[in-house]
Amino acid sequence: MVYLFGSAAGAVLGIDGAVRAGLARGWDVAVGLTPAARGWLEGRVPELEGLTGHPVKSAYRWPGQPDVLPPADAVLFAPATFNSVNSLALGLTSSWVAGYAAEAAGKGVPVLVMPCVNTALAAHPQFPRSVAALREAGVEVLLGEGAFVPNEPGAAGPYPWEAALDAVARALEPGGPGAG
Image 1 (tube, rainbow, N blue to C red):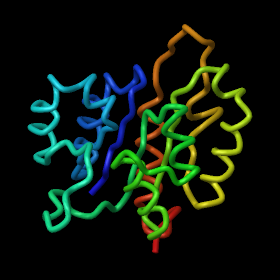
Image 2 (image 1 turned 120 degrees about the horizontal axis):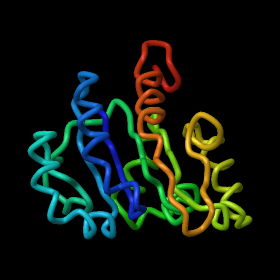
Image 3 (image 1 turned 60 degrees about the vertical axis):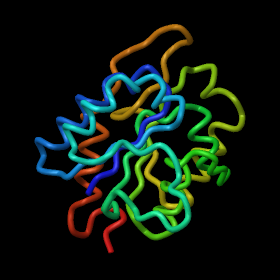
Image 4 (image 1 turned 180 degrees about the horizontal axis):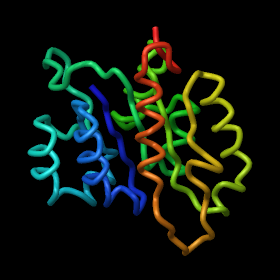
């Protein structure tokens, strides 16, 4: 089971293509969204649920409610905004996706984060500290050559979904990063 999490960056509008590509690789895929990303995609939630066969989750369950998703074998948080990267690194789990990703990393489940930030946000002093903290926690941050490269403010380039999915495939391989 691969959890595909997205936050409110323009690239989240292409999450359905990433779901289809994951399904084509033979994965069972479930989608989780930050509340803002869910707002952006609200009209497409039924399509995503139809593709995956799972509910799109964006909120914590109430005490006593059953889990609606099977446990994850890997978590891909892409796109991860500046806020999401920093929240996850600092352990601020006000969104379900940040909370699940933080806990999954602590349990040894492979967690991969591909940011979607511009060069101005990437230059903020907290961002490299957050990337370092995530890497120290065992999270694979897909940033730089061969992954996501920040764009200039106001410019948008193609989001490297395929590189993210390839990284998940490596993480799922026996003996791969995060393999028990």
